[in-house]
Structure formats: structure tokens, C-alpha cells
Length: 125
Image (cartoon, rainbow, N blue to C red; front, side, top):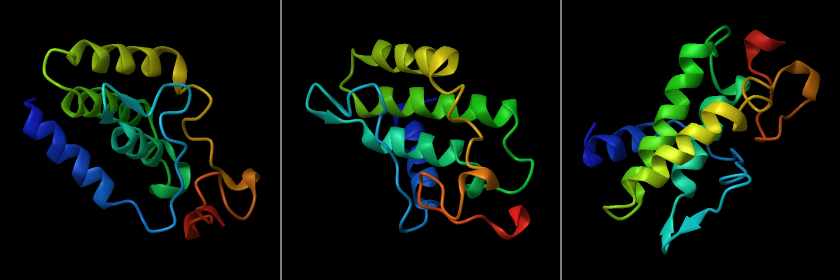
């Protein structure tokens, strides 16, 4: 995937996020590296991991893998050329360790709004 294609895919995900959605940035990783804001890639990743943002049953392992890939590609596209390996490391770390507890964790048991500030969708009530 080219840099432009990655940025278009990232923007497409960001455009689907409703007003009021809260993200936690890049969680344990920095939101900025080398003067570049990586938060858009992390925001899209948070959106794709939120149970309340998607139809019932949509958050399977294929969905998780696609979300993690978009994060890695987004980070690579947002960084200067020559630093793409950081995007690969980001993808690898999140895919291997980072998203295990956060993925698909905004179910009905978390209350009237999840940590992303979304109420339960109709299918969850």
C-alpha cells in the first residue's frame, strides 16, 4: 500500500468517527515523534477497537488484524520517509501485546457510556 493509499484509508476511518468520540491517543506510546502527530492513526485504531462503534458480531479477529494494520500503515504514512520501520514496530507491538485487553471491551457491562463516550447501540440494549 502506498503512502497516499494509507493516508486515504486512515482518513476514511477518521471520517466515520462521530462527534463526541473520545480516544486516549497512542496510549502507552508517544502521540508525537520527530515533530509528527501520530494521534490520527491512534484515534482511528481506538474507533476500530470500540464495540459500541460497530454492528453486533463485527469485531472478530479479522477486524482486529485490519485495525492493527491500519495503525501501522497510518504511523508509517505520518512519519517522514526513512522512518517507516517505526510504523512496523508500532503495528507489531500493538498486534502482539497492546490491544488484547482493549479490543471489543465496550460492552453493556461498562455502563451508560464507554470510555470512548459512546452510549450502547440499539443492538446492545
